[in-house]
Length: 142
Figure 1 (cartoon, rainbow, N blue to C red):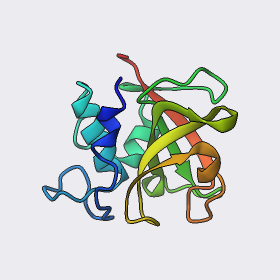
Figure 2 (figure 1 turned 120 degrees about the horizontal axis):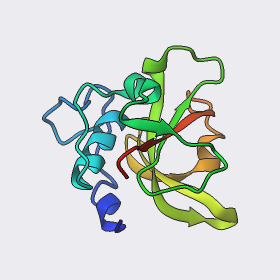
Figure 3 (figure 1 turned 90 degrees about the horizontal axis):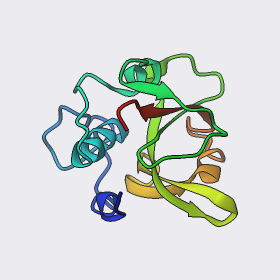
Figure 4 (figure 1 turned 135 degrees about the vertical axis):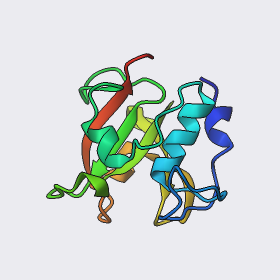
């Protein structure tokens, strides 16, 4: 998977309401996942949002955090005590690593108001609902 797949999304404007069905150029984390997967040749059903991706076992499988990471793995984040899966945030592993083997993720950031790269360790420092890694999901057909 080429870095260009991800690079084209960096800097695009974030908007919470701009999900997979939104026709604007803005996007949220769910729409970003859909666009990247479609671009990679794996279009997802439009009804797969944070909750559905987290709970799905038909299209995606759970990946143990200690397993080898693969490009397009979806990282699902939430608050430590969060039980409403609709509030989970999604990011995608780019296949790249920062220092100390820290995975680099791409996501639509509400804090930055745009699509950015963030390391896994930075995600776990956030206190805006992304401080806990809830799951890593991998498309079964990859």
